[in-house]
Length: 340
Image (cartoon, rainbow, N blue to C red; front, side, top):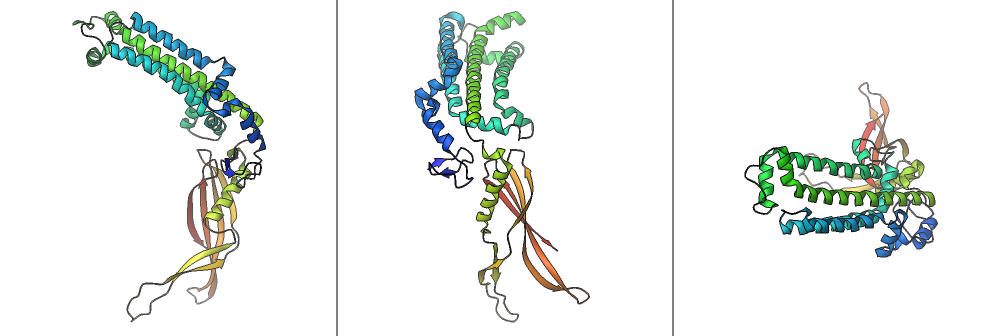
């Protein structure tokens, strides 16, 4: 079984998706023809090719800068910290590049969901926003590091004990310039590693955005962009979950005990009653891009006696509120009753 590109349901290759009835023919052709979908080094190389292998160039540059740091720029820092910085920088560049390659389909989903989501968190999830925000946060953290080393005596003492070699830190730290000069090797090491990893992340994320745009041009759009199709999937799923497809409802009926006799536990049994099909209304999109719908059904109708002794028809209407995620997967079904 394969995964549908529209609704993420399972389907048999060569036939429409049974869940959303979408044609996955373009998706099957895309997977056969695109090298990015083959995985491994071949897929990663094809992924980086449109931007002239920029993430790989940044990784090689990170290795060169690390070797320069080992050669003297990071003098005064303990050797084990220097080796650890080299490993984290080079491996970090490789890791974020490969992570964005593997997340290229998720990036497409986030791009298309961005206009549907609400709230400030939704804006931060947009891939292009993250591509700008991550380097900016790295620069901010670098300034905070410099400010902390210069202004905090406790932070300076901690760094001198953990990161610097014995004898590097002076007894009298001096003024602003002396403190910055003393911490300069550590600042260069942290900033170079942080900047290079963040730039590798941004460049590979922009590659994923580019790939997602190509998918949007060639492939069917996801389910959450088609309100009618999404509502149909949720309706069918809710009716199947609650066993309402045939227009019947299930009532649990317990046998009553007679007064004066020993109390016996009720004997429960199921009784199916025809109630007609659901009436769906009040569709709205949720803040995360999902959908919320309401269904009305008249489950019971009986004659009751009013205070004046007259007979009156009483109807019990059940209202079901169904909440689903952007892919039409049901998250919650709530039920309440109204008497009319």
